[in-house]
Image 1 (cartoon, rainbow, N blue to C red):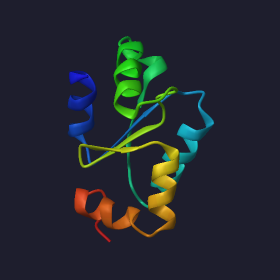
Image 2: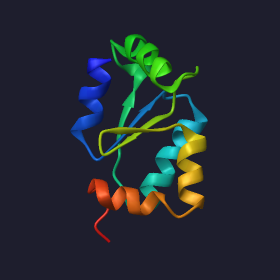
Image 3: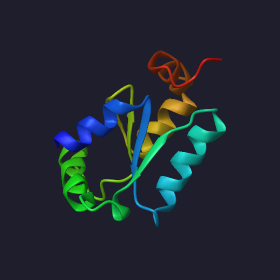
Image 4: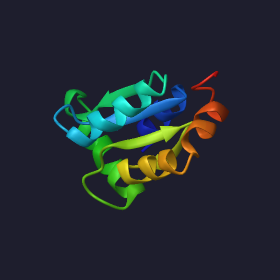
Length: 103
């Protein structure tokens, strides 16, 4: 859990992902199209990925634990939460407040 929190706090937007996960790719593309440069942590490419995946599953209360999106060091959630924030117009202000967007 400490590693997840440490990584999540290092950048404005951090996405914990799996390289073969289509929803992870979709969420990452959304942020890129909004002008955000997220840090993507590919759990299947990290030696401690399984440990982080278990910690994220506990945080999210579900499995699979990816994508897990952190904005401003705080857990936002997975695809459904990110898309809900985007469609309601609340994602961009959240990104601005975290320093991920300047426009």
